[in-house]
Amino acid sequence: MEIMREITVTVNVNGIPVRAAVSPQESLLDFLRYRAGATDVKCGCNKGDCGTCTVILEDRAVKSCLVLAAQADNRRVWTVRGLEKDPLMQALQESFATHGAVQCGFCTPGMLLTAKNFLEHNPKPDRAEIKEAIAGNLCRCTGYKKIVDAIAAVAASRTGDRA
Amino acid sequence: MGVSGFAYISPSTKEETLTVLSEAGEKGRIVAGSTNVLPDIRARKIAGCILVDISHLRELKGIEIAGDTVTIGSLTTISELLQSAVIAKEAGVLWQACRCFADPLVRNRATIGGNIANASPAADGVVPLLALEATVNVESKARGKRAIPLDEFFTGPGKSVLEPGELITSVSFAKTSAMKSAFIKFGLRKAMAISLASIGMVVGFNGDTIARVSIALGALAPTPVRARETEKYLAGKKIDDEIIARASELIKTEVNPISDVRASRDYRQHLTGVLFRRAIEAALA
Ligand SMILES: Cc1cc2nc3c(=O)[nH]c(=O)nc-3n(C[C@H](O)[C@H](O)[C@H](O)COP(=O)(O)OP(=O)(O)OC[C@H]3O[C@@H](n4cnc5c(N)ncnc54)[C@H](O)[C@@H]3O)c2cc1C
Ligand code: FES
Ligand code: FES
Image (cartoon, rainbow over all chains, first blue to last red; front, top):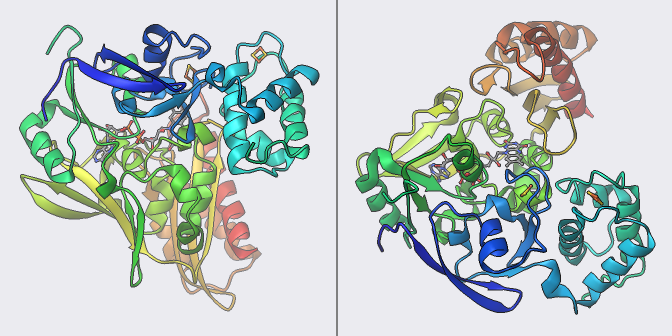
């Protein structure tokens, strides 16, 4: 155990181990964007308010701007692009498209990850529960209704079953 | 300490953590969920310190019951509290508060120990724990173990009796399954709003007479506070409209709120009475 000015971490990003020396106060968001090249993770506010930086850390959706990169050492992180072949993610993406739940698209990667993580833990939510689940993901364009519709449609079609 | 002024260490046990903290002294800064620490670093409210990362210490996680006492490890997250049947049953006021806490993503990281140590007058984890008459369990190399009543823990906004080197290990309180609970948070939005005012209440009824009541208020004074006078007034009273009306006037005299960008002092004082009424009605329902 030693006090470090620089920490060598290995984070498993979308199934691929990414190793880098990080500074103590570096966020997981910066690690993902600048060291792992995962620019599908967006930086909206950098202080926990907007949810555009959402990723799945192990089994939980979190805001990566609120996590130290060092805290993700030896952990698994999933971003949208790593879930291209995931059936639930595919269903959500299709549903977002058909329901018009994407306008500028800046909130979309975070919104999709929150929705996926939520449906995995809660396969049959009602609308109120869906709204609560996305309460930490802000969207400036859609007015949310279409996003809730899109998630509800996936839940209803039961594609949410451990796909 | 390098260009950035920050250093990092990640002890692997609680014992190691206590040693590191005692050596680091004033320079040491515990990091748990980092939902306060990282924004504070970015806002330059925190600079030049050794980040002591405790986030992976299993010893500090989890919820235990021994006899009549519930003990929550300091690293337990708000999401874990919400998922706990024990908390839902034995600490209804805390469970309700966790539902109003930030948003689901922040709740996945935010810990109860961090919420207490951060010492915000509006802390949504602290207000219900105050109503539960909780005790904060603290440990350090210099002073050993201390059990501090939560009521004596805070000294001002962002300030507490916690000394450099001290680690909050857990928080404990007596079961309240036989009592009624209510928590109400009044913010400007439903999610991710700092409380303008909040109230946590635990009431024991004897028929329709109040046998025991504890009331905690958030964001209405420099620290979360108990409404002791109102509690005294209510004890032994048979609840009716008249009593509720009088208590909701009395409770306004027990707060000392600020005026800020979110609301004026007068408005917060008014809210206190309104929240009290809503809380007691919720507890009665
Ligand atoms: C977007 C957003 C919304 C939020 N909404 C709310 C809300 O609705 N209600 C609310 O109450 N809070 C809210 N917060 C604040 C924050 O999430 C909570 O205070 C949280 O509980 C802090 O816990 P943490 O584990 O993240 O603490 P950290 O950030 O890791 O630490 C916070 C402070 O506590 C100290 N500390 C941490 N653990 C210990 C310990 N075991 N012993 C001694 N000291 C310790 C740290 O040194 C630091 O000073 C919000 C924050 C954000 C970013
Ligand atoms: S960038 Fe992380 S919440 Fe806004
Ligand atoms: S689609 Fe533009 S922010 Fe949501």
